[in-house]
View 1 (spheres, rainbow, N blue to C red):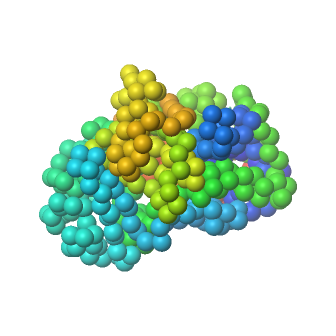
View 2 (cartoon, protein in one colour):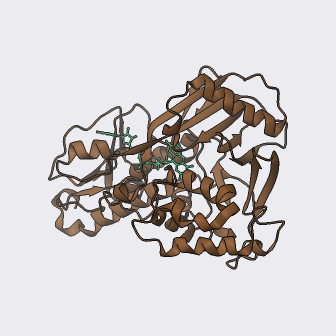
View 3 (cartoon, rainbow, N blue to C red):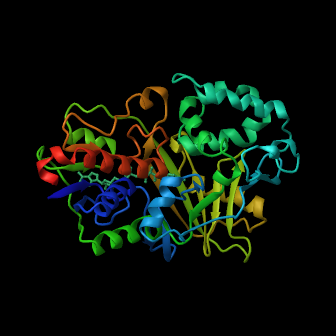
Length: 401
Ligand SMILES: Cc1cc2nc3c(=O)[nH]c(=O)nc-3n(C[C@H](O)[C@H](O)[C@H](O)COP(=O)(O)OP(=O)(O)OC[C@H]3O[C@@H](n4cnc5c(N)ncnc54)[C@H](O)[C@@H]3O)c2cc1C
């Protein structure tokens, strides 16, 4: 009569919502005391306010995410510019510039020197087409070598952020799927989006409320250590946890970290927003009302540096870009050691499908074979797919009728 969903990250939450919407009784198990997994918010004593574990950037083309937010009544919780524009600051030149895509499908922005990446020419953008023919073994950096300043001023940053893997070793095919659902469709699918008031307030709490209101049972702080093969189940835990629960399951087994720094500092009114940084350690800067948050992907390359040295370097970069005082404000560092799977060709080949050998058991999570890198959009799609797959076998499943 009921479906067990194990893991209350966005993949498990999406699966639980899909099943509940279809009239099934869901019991959602989460090992941690709070839901959200790798996309969560918490109150920070040092900063005296709530922060996210890390900035999460989405795009208007993330259709499964938008549909999920609509379903749980949180569709107004994302914010960002109304246009497909991305402000950048180049630490090497000290110059700021803004990438301004046009809304429609034909990319006429690349013909305008005021809209495209500074110093780029048309042939650099043509080099980008190689990504469409990327083979599973192709790597991002070598494949895009011919894109010159387009690579060093935009693509390198996009690749490392989207794949959380050094472009030297990242699978180009993984980036192809990102471009196919954003740039290739046009600016309307590439409008930046991020949580207005926190990841938990956006992706997690509204979903838990929505589920509870519809009779789902949420069991926080309950780690599942064994699966009942006869019970209809969606396993939406990280890959290492799935491998423990399903003997013989092949899963990605190499991971990359993401480093987040949250500085207690308010930019003047009107300065709230986000920026991409090029040529330094800082990659993305999000200015919230009282905190400036910085994200650094593929952060294992900085494993030898102390938190203090990283904070000093990053703050010096931000201070130079925004003309801020050199003293480092109070800060909190959040180093997510296993933020995502490593998006190398070898690791991509280890992603399992939704279905397992047991028709009662489906897999979900950003690390499953979603066709997308390990992202919120991929995680939500995986949850939807797992719920659909389980429901399609409904008649044959005694536990779920
Ligand atoms: C710092 C950071 C920045 C990121 N930035 C972006 C971004 O900008 N854009 C983007 O789209 N994505 C981003 N991501 C990736 C995104 O957060 C993940 O893809 C997504 O949250 C994964 O969701 P999930 O449900 O697949 O997995 P998880 O969030 O890992 O959820 C799995 C859940 O299972 C629980 N669990 C584990 N074992 C058990 C067990 N035995 N029993 C019960 N429960 C169990 C865990 O506690 C966890 O809550 C970022 C991730 C991090 C860490």
